Length: 329
Image (cartoon, rainbow, N blue to C red; front, side, top):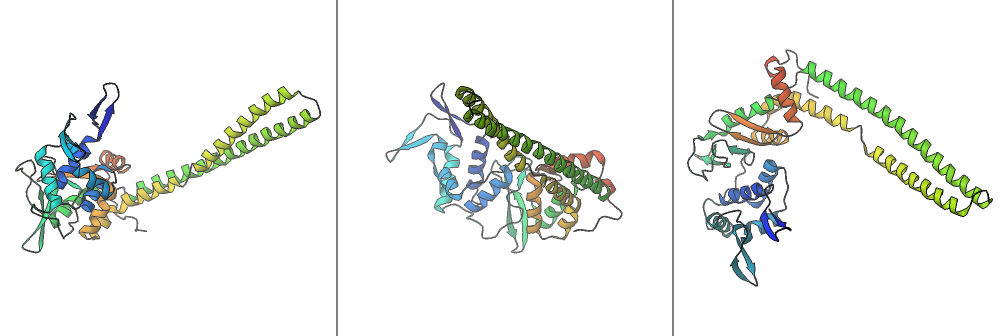
């Protein structure tokens, strides 16, 4: 969250990590997250996983509000605060259990993947009339225009996210064939390269063996043997390194691509049959975050679903769903 400025011998805010730290304090200060829930929310939003112990230490560290502890006493530091004192104190009250509401006993399905499009606050949830779940902005930055949304309606709106990565069966077959053909070509190329490397390695080792025999027979000098053997051993090491790198290039990654395409093809039909909890798991595979307003959803797709969604829009695939879609595997 901070980094050392070696030129000026100071500590400065790390602009790349600071938004995550501020978001961490903002979310925990609401009192709607346990450390486990905060950990999952940060993973969904930023793609980074933290240990609960690390989050506990960070959220209790006064360094982030501009102070520091030395020999048991609190002092004002010269570093730029990442969070203000009021928010830091609210976080400490959450730890002490003095603020309301306390941690929820109920796990809300879409918690952690939603933000408010009006003010970028987190979207939380609560139960009304002991049976209806409503999602709404935390209101951390004050009142906003996001209305309370019933979980059933929200689930339907979030279904647009997976609907927008739909790939028609005819297109899916073409893409799968292309990937599998690429896999076959890559395997052939790898095989040819593997054989060339083996031939080079065999040649270098033969030279080493022959030159050693020549040295013993007095056909070449000791200095010549040392110089050439060093060159050939270096070449031998380079070839071995190339062979190791070649084996680490897995054509099976093409099959992962096929599975992603299959998921994009049937994600929406699966989504419609699932419970809110299962829908949320599917959404977390596809998006890292999603903001909502009173009407629309604005997903941030994970790779490669961002490319699929862009292609879907450009090609109009969603508008022309298959009349005879492929059966699910």
